Amino acid sequence: MSQLIISKRGNVYQYRFEIASQGGKRKFINKSGFKTKQEATEAGNIAYAEYLNAGVPFKECKISYSDYLDYWLDNYCKSNLKYTTIHKYTTIINKYIRPSLGLYKLSTITSVRLNMFITEVCDKYTFSRSYFKNILKVLKGTFRDACNLYGFIKYNPALSLRLPRVECTKKDPKHLYSQEEINKILYRFRHDDTFTCSFLTSCYTGMRTGEVFALTWDDIDLDNGLINIKHNVYNKKKDNKGRWYLGSPKTMSGERTIYISTTLLNALKNYKQKQEQLKNLYGNKYIYYYLEEVTNQYGKVVEQRIVEKNESTKNKKNLNLVFTKSNGKYSGTSILKYPFKIIHDELGIEKCRFYDLRGTYATRILNSGVEIRDVADMLGHKNIETTENYYVSSISETRKNATAQFDKMMQSDIITEITEYQIY
Image (cartoon, rainbow, N blue to C red; front, side, top):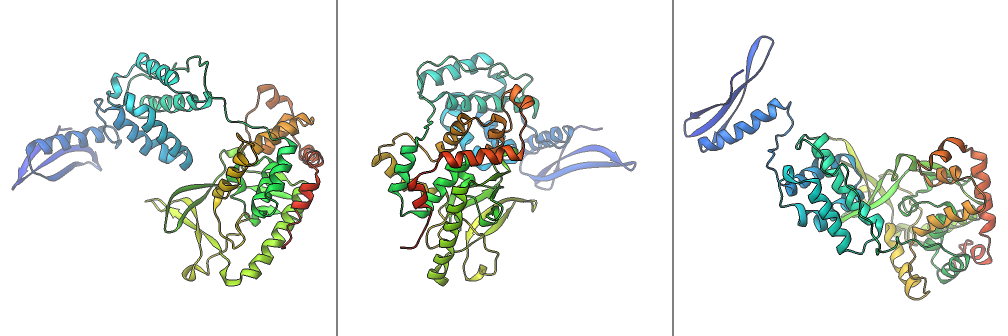
């Protein structure tokens, strides 16, 4: 097989090289149109190296770590990770990793330099330990793939990298809601049905925030008292079609079916009844939505976008979203911003989040004597301790009993009053 041949054709240069014969016939790859011989030679060398590597784009070992990070985000992250994870990784790369390490060649970065970097980050910032772990995870992931997936480096300098001991960092922002706080919040927002019903849905099920606000009425079986968790909602940069998208749950085990307790079932039935009444009151001014499929360059559906219906899309199938405003307007998780500002500033419950209802649910239900394997299944967790994974069984009846126990524990006059959802 011949090497690269550079020749002149008229006023331009071309490269040409022979490839494997097919059917006994000689085959070549060539490209013309280069202004100089040097341009043709450089392009030809890259094309020839790519051919020898079975079509994998050629990357010189001189590539900077900064350029490699862009390559990793485009070629690995966008194909394998969810949008919210990519956004989080991009922030970590641009704020912390690229400014310190981006100027070096990928092939020259050693385990010593990486250890210096992670130690400097831990000394400089007062993040929670979990956030430091995220920085380490991104760092290790980039070098793992550079070595094992792309072959850009011969060994992985981040293989044995670990966090140093960190004494003074922020505590992870977790809050365990008391019954008094829950009643206080619900009473303060007793006239905001969407907020209180979404609050109770998370409180009584331990669903993730994105799972709660991705719910449609098609996901809820009110007759049999079941919620089928199939989606997670996330937001992207806003444009003329909005910014909310439906994706799959956070993990594979996140797709699950959970029982609805008696109190929450009554709340959801009353809330749905009021929503139907509001649709009649607003008439043609009520806002409806549909799902728009977003495809990549190959025509594969990669996302489902929540889009407001208009005259041209009125025949599209309605997306029956649960947690909308009175006029049907969907704001995703943004509907929580104002209530939690009030909760923090006015009610004085400073360090709490909607997501903390999930941890509160798990803690309370575990303390009531429910098996941890059942709790893990209800929360959509795959892994717990090895003994718990192999020696604790989970059956539907025990999970149903656990839901009933939690419902009994949570009984209060405030909740009973709130969940009537009457039009005043």
